[in-house]
Image 1 (tube, each protein chain N blue to C red):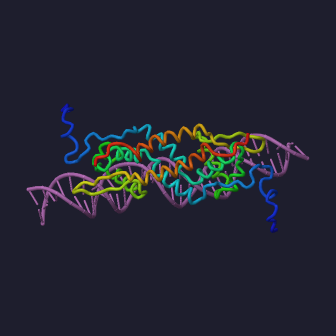
Image 2: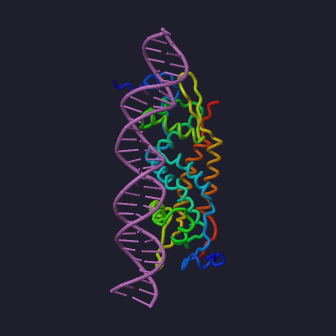
Image 3: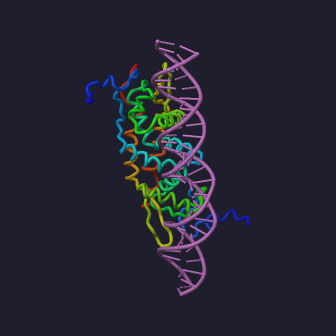
Length: 127
Length: 127
DNA sequence: AGCATATATTGACAATCGTCAATATAGCCG
DNA sequence: CGGCTATATTGACGATTGTCAATATATGCT
């Protein structure tokens, strides 16, 4: 019943990788995938790109005219990006100006690259 | 009617960025966000990571025991990853072995980095 | 105060996503 | 053949997402 010693027999009848486990834990995987989900939208990518172009000086109405969605939708995406820490905003009179948070984006970039290089270039070739 | 010359007057009553447009077009934005959507899932990230660890030799049953979802769900995620060209598989008798498509991942990495560097480091500071 | 404009929020809706039980398919072995 | 095992597919379901019209909030102006 309590056969804890027979690690090779229990699992992997004829298979090959007994103790295989992801190097990325469930929590870190969740964190990274949450950030990726924010990026994974064409409107949000375009918003980020426009904000990056004119650092610190883009008001919502300018975004609206440049995007194929209506104002409440733009507002919605801005909120998501802001909640994710990728952008922030500042009110000036009647207008609200959004800008990218370069630090936060650089941080995400680094985390993504870490993982990505592990995926695309890593380790143990079996040939 | 055909007032093409009055660019400053038409739009942007009191606002600031008349001709703002994303440098990334709708199609490229869509393409990139599709790829990011595939990555934006913790199970798929873990699958990719395990495949990258043991290049060319991971059968589905090994993935199953290492993941917190049931077999049909694993199969579902493998299908998405495969459809996206990020992984592929090969049947050997009863088992199916999956492996990462490093080229395709490297390509995605490059496209992401292009965009990302534009976002995080780019251009025109207004201060 | 009252009006006008810019942005945010709400609520509804269709579409997509992640998951699983049930079932189907494919290959082995007796 | 028939049974067994590994993987895929189907179909259902709840959860999440993207969108918009309608409405609310905030600010400036007269």
